[in-house]
Amino acid sequence: MSAIIPEEDTFYLVALLRFSPPYPSGPPFQSILAQNEAILHYCTTAGIDMKLYLPHYKTESDWKRHFGRKWQQFLQRKSTYDPKAILAPGQRIFSRSTDSTAFTRLYSS
Image (cartoon, rainbow, N blue to C red):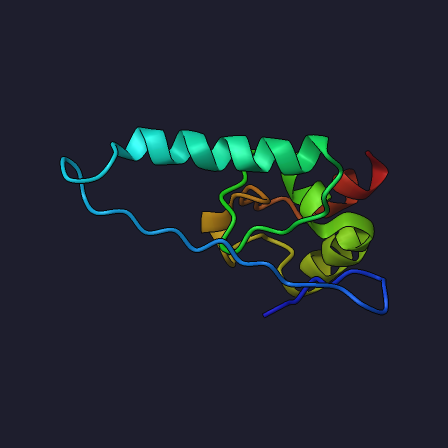
């Protein structure tokens, strides 16, 4: 397990844990997802540094933003300990490869 914390001496954890009764008593699921996206968009555009708990990122650039300055260190560790990208495929950070040069290509890009 990894923890990503800011470089500052002092930082604050603010957790937004939401609950809603199931539909039809509560709002439709799509409505809740839209609200979550609006909150994330606000944080991003306002320059609020934040991390998602159990993120479901869809692109490599999302993961790069998540890891920030530690992205290259993350790539190095992944290359060393999981060169074929067989561990944790559910996060969709890397595609599985039988090509041992896959990470070499990532470093050069």
